[in-house]
Length: 494
Image (cartoon, rainbow, N blue to C red; front, side, top):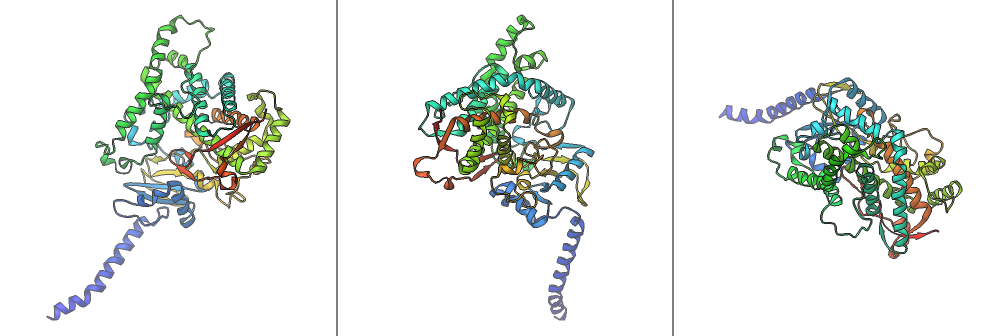
């Protein structure tokens, strides 16, 4: 009896001692990890991601500092949210073997053919990147494409003139324009119409939208690899179907070009398809690279232009300033050319300010380290996923004065640029995995935005005359987009 009472008396302190020992053991084993919130068993911190990963990670940075960690499923993610943290993460990338995190929905077979989704910087990946940089994104390549961009922008302006006084979906219009520009560069063809109400049940437009939607769908296999072979959400199958739908759009073009290519002379005005064929690319290699170029070079550009126009409509003084600059440097009757862009510093400042507030990719793509390392005096275990939170740095009050306000003037007398040198401003990434197409994207954004602003005044639909009520809610996935498309009415200024 006494022993029973003694046991009952000793049980509470024994339990308390066990809890303290376990807590201290757990803390001592993880105390050198970057700080972070409590991680739930099995789920980790996944339940808190519903508000948007970039927002959740930014809140964590405010609580735990510029380098913090979270457990998402079975993976440890280390997030850098300051220039110093970003610099340290990039140093780790440079000195350690790494691999790129690849969504399980589209991983099969991509290592050999992919530019964007290759897990490692293989020799083939370097060849693809070099080819794109030389043929598409070099100064010479960009100059040779200028007439195609100008021609398609002129078509867009003429279309808008026919829509004067009617509500226009800016995102759809600019997306169609960017698709056709790239279609002409790669295949010498337009692929989709400019009418946003076209009921296209198939074709490239549908395929690209499906791929973007699938890319933003959370996949349980990404956080729990054990489920990869099951594909419980059917995302692999759906992604494969969307890819095949895109391939079918230019399948005939590739076949015909292979037949006719032998008869081409050296003076033939070739497109990028001819370049890929001369390099000996198989149909599968052409399909994979091309669909990645279309996926990466259309939605993000259209979204950035949509955000820029929305910010200018909402900020009247900025709109007046950019319109005055365009009138002074180009005039109202001259066709806008890419050669004019160097004369428009305030336009460039508006684009930079848009990219600061609305970076195309709020989070730079995760890279996993294959060896443990030290980052900012914290121990980061091998296979940890390293992420740079570009969105957080763009809105950090310690880096930017009045960071939530749209103020292009902050860039007018500043050398801060988006070329990966200024670690507080990385809208196109940094290092080996920096977006190779950013020079192309900037050319396109500049001339389309300049044309939209110079040739038209923009009004909200009748019930939304107060521009302060313009909804600027964000919807984040792979790219930053407005939650609701910008629906506005153009009025021609000519």
